[in-house]
Length: 569
Image (tube, rainbow, N blue to C red):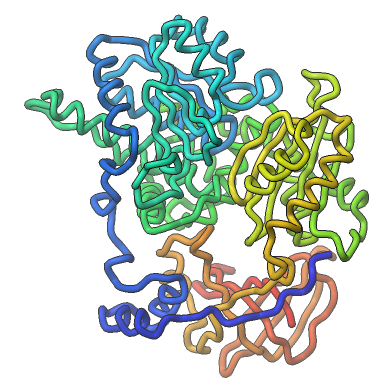
């Protein structure tokens, strides 16, 4: 079990706080911003016009010229995506945006179970006989390709041009693509290294529109409004849990604005209705917890193309029908995940207190859900975790998915495993917090040993002594719906955490809800407020130190506030 975290007050730069307050930012929001590294009012607010320019994104100009030539020659473009939400939204943005710009374009997404990840030689062969497009002239990867050396070579040998757009960390050798766009490639000076795959695709479209402008494509008529795609960019950015630096926050904020105005894609609005979310009140957390899982479920259990079709669909009735299918698949995914999670927790039990890692495997596990199992184990025990399942396509082979904790860069760990235990990993890739791998089943004992050793070598020991940073106390008079609205107006997420306050409350009453959650009635100063502690059945003391988040409470039509308690001390 993960050790109980120690509460710590988030550091607030007094100069930043003074700058923000002097610029007219409310004292509470100024404190929250300053605690997240915002130094002045120029770094908050803004719109699409304030986005970083694409000129510094290495490869974007080359990609734009290649694609502009292809559009002029009426060449056929095929987007090859990934089977998660970032990949699905990236494919949809690419298809819709390129069609806006005059391209003949279609898409292909590898099936997780039949083809594996990325632009493999096998998926190139599938692409060459695309059922709708026919033989393409140009392949464009989205959210993959940086490690697809063999796939790029296969496509070029077949006479195709290849544009790679990706955001994953590159290996020692880059693919010899005709154009390569990735903010994390060597030599790229783009200030934001945290674009999601969908964000990279959006930037390529911006660069392409500018290139077409120089060629006189829009003479006498309005340019295509690429901002119409920002609802999809926002969803993919949040769902991929990339760091929400200022540029990503601008992308997400613009997308949320479209959602709240009811101007989003019909498929997104349909999914929101199924999730019981009101579009005009949607926030960044809804993207990650309501929409993202429903798109991802298609890629985990079936075919992510269903999710892409939901995002592309213009007809509201057909979008509703596809969204219902996605919702049904997501329900099935939850059932499978629950069973696998319970099995994994039982297998792990109470792990060695001196250990630093967890590795879980059962022969019958579903390959599409192992990433969620790894995430649950990581959350429960506070350790970098790998979960593995058999690859039914290749006997004797395992597919693995990993999740990590702050301070342990998972891809770097796997790279060290590969160097220290050569031959254990057939392939791997990913990010600091999430990664995937393929390996021979017989190598599992060596993987466990090498994984533990690599984490011990690379990780800061402090990473295993969790600290829960809070924004400190909240004045009783700020426990109101206005405060919730002010907080909800901002974009929160990875690297820009949602506010978490800490106060000592008088507990007036407490009771269990559905035998699983603790419902509290609290008093802070002269204010009474309701709260819930999800997953806790033990009572708290009458005087309790609680770390909590605010949520809007509309019970019986009242516009109030209640608390979600994240930690009891």
